[in-house]
Structure formats: structure tokens, C-alpha cells
Length: 176
Image (cartoon, rainbow, N blue to C red):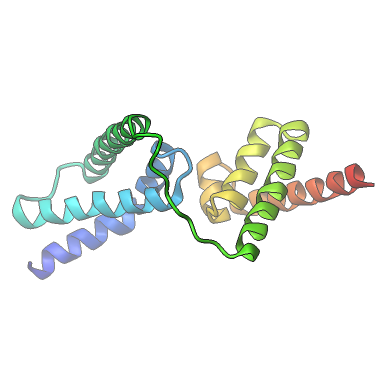
């Protein structure tokens, strides 16, 4: 591995990582951990290509096509796993060991999430729901959300703040 190859890889990373990451999130329907894994896999394959072959003529297009292919592979494996799970014998049991406090915490969190989603569905439009989901559920940075929806960072940050305040106000109204 030469210094020039490392520099080329670093330039491609810096130039295209945001676009490729967004594409990974889109392909995996809001599964951030899996999207990050896919991002790393795509750039790992790029690294191998640069070392063994050469730099692709259009690195961004090559990376997006690679992510697309990886997502199809992920989908095929997921579907296979689903089919295998449905064919599993029913008499097999799995023991899960949890502390009572852990179970209570999980149930409380699920209840809060259910209340939040009910409010989201009732009071917000599609764009507002999408923005809030990206921020609170997926944990996507606000600057990246702004890029994804085509707005500037300041207005997106203000919109998220207003949406969170709107939900808190409506939640208080419904409780009392």
C-alpha cells in the first residue's frame, strides 16, 4: 500500500462518506447500526479495489452501486432467516434471563414510545414525523437531517426544537 493510494482513499472518503451513509440509511430503512456496518463494508471493498486493481473512474457511483448490491444481499439473508425461523420446531424454547428491573425498564420505555408514536401520528404531518424520527429514534445528527431534507442546519434545528415542544405540550394536554 503506497502513500498515494492511502491519499486517494482518504480523499474519496472525505468527499463521499456523507452521501454514501445517507444511502445506506435509506436502503436499510432506519437501522443505523446496520447502515454503519454497510458503510464500512462498502468502503472496505473500495480499499481492496484500490489496492488490487485501480481507482474506479467514478468512485461515488461505484460506492452507491456497491451499497445497492450489499443491501440486496442483506435482504436475501434476512428473508432466509425469516423462512428458517418459521420452519423451526415449536417445542424448542429459549431461556432469557433478565432482572426484574430490566423488564420494568423495557416495558416503561415501550409504553413511552407508544404514547409518542400516537401523538406523532395524530398531530404531525409526514415531513414532521420523518424529521423527528430521524432525530430522536435514529439518532441522526441534525446537520445530516438538514442535508437529507434539503434545508439549512439552523432552520432544521429550530424545527426539531419546535416539534419536540409541540409534542410535550400536547402530551400534557392529553394527560390532564
